[in-house]
Length: 308
Image (cartoon, rainbow, N blue to C red; front, top):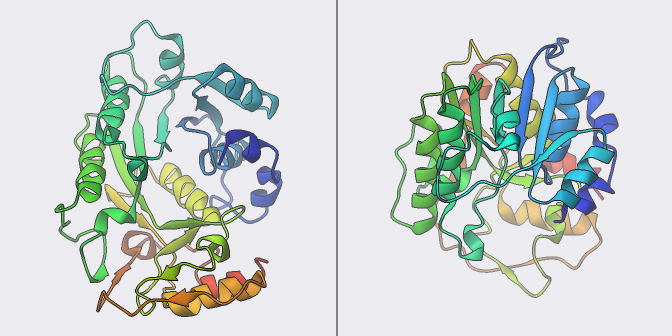
């Protein structure tokens, strides 16, 4: 999805201000840089700014930077490099890494054939660690796809299966952050993202068979991702966990979920193949639940009813 479409969409600050709170406390005097202002990064920036944080966002072109500025966001043109080099003379990098918190919201693009995601993340880490950097907290938005190859209930403590290229790439990128010298480095493993302009009733064409219909879904609404990231910032000094799953605690079966998603949009019922993966995997947000974090959309079937 293009940045322009995000900018022309719903006023996310108004949407989220009433439902996403940090325990009544705003983030005054907190500076946050968000690398990647797309479908997640843009509304995240708007929410944190509405909470009182000083927010900076990045874009990969001057045109996109100007579009973000029109939305009242402090923006710079910046692109991570696979060369993993210090950028001591890069003014944009100086602004980014003078922030106390850096959140990485760039997609790995593995499905497009790219394999350099770990190198891109390393480039950011190198600069976050450099002398003169003010970064105190570094957060990588990763994916629960890193649990691919596992079955049954899984959480942040599970040993990963790195036998596929995708899981190996994601895990290698995560390690760049988890082993960094930044005082607080965290990986947030996001479930399948749903929300505005990402309705699950449109995920599959009507002639495509949906696999493993008896397996559970591992999705999360964007509102809850934004709330969870804000929670990590607020609890920077008290939440010890380095890896955090952000996935809705409700896990209906794929058949039930996609049938309802299609019905809400008045599409033809989806078609399913025979179950192949006997157990499937169910990703638990153990760290957040143990902290007492409250999901806004814990029951995604209930969310579907008002999503059309």
